[in-house]
Image (tube, rainbow, N blue to C red; front, side, top):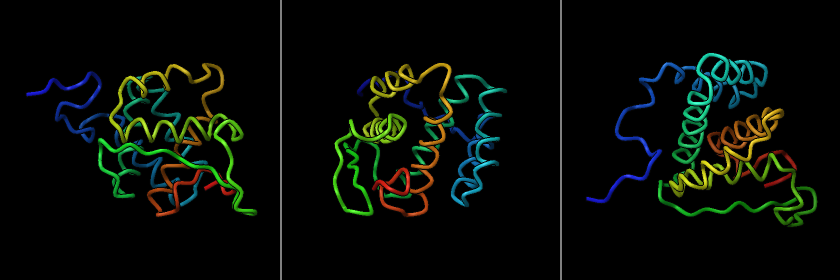
Amino acid sequence: MAKRPAGIPTGRSPATEPWYRYAQVAMAAAVREEWELAADATWAVFAKFGLQGLQGMLQVWCDLALTAAGIPHGSRIQASFRDLSSDTPHAAEEVPAPVRWAADMVGARAAMDMDAWAQLLFELPPNNIRPHLMQLLEHTANMVRGVELACPEHFR
């Protein structure tokens, strides 16, 4: 039997974790575009459960989005960025860092690449994580709603 990579759940359901309900509330609020409630639930996880709860919540968001999009774990996906008004493609370097980070997080989770996932978490700016987290929540909520792999309205 192959050894399970570090960081991949061992069968314990995230639903048993104390932060899980907050992750659900944040996602449900984001899907309804109730951003104040979504942000409050996100920051409650960080305040009450620290980095471990936050990482679990990010995994749950990505897993919900991947399931909604029909993308199985183990898949290699890559985001593309396009200006919706002109249908002009953009290189990843041309889009804001939080947008790239959110797309990369979903890609790392889809691939179950825990090294890439950990590196992306490490790259979060310690004094300014809010834009990145909220961008990931928006990105994953769009996927749950069935919107194309899109972060902000002007990229798809």
